[in-house]
Image 1 (cartoon, rainbow, N blue to C red):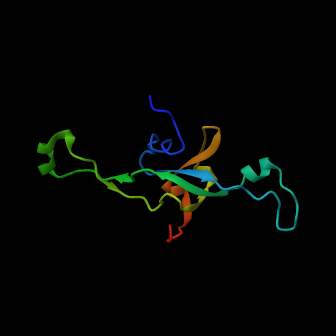
Image 2: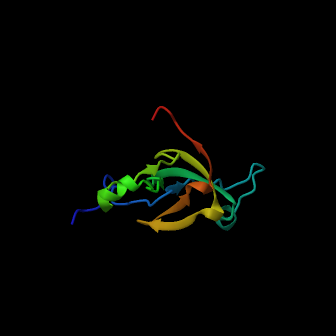
Image 3: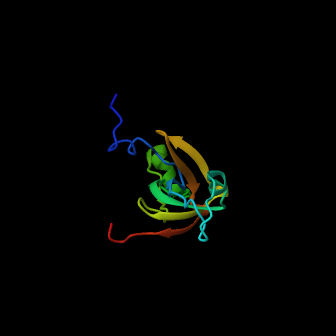
Length: 124
């Protein structure tokens, strides 16, 4: 068995369908007026932000052609790709996200429909 390193830990993860793995951005601990917010308040925000770590293949395209029936089940599944890409800053609805812990770090698995906005650095 191969040892898990920082280089290959994301290669072993497969994100399914239209979902995106997001590492949450560190929340601000105080308001604009200077009041400190406890972590329980910060986590209850309806809108969260974070960086896309890995994205699924997208929405599967159903094959309806009768010509494809002769190919059997070995033919490749085709997908409509997602808009989210690795490294994007995603603003998403907390309600649609599922929080997970992976290697003692907190992540969210978010369907693309819960992502409100993406910020992408074109230079990357």
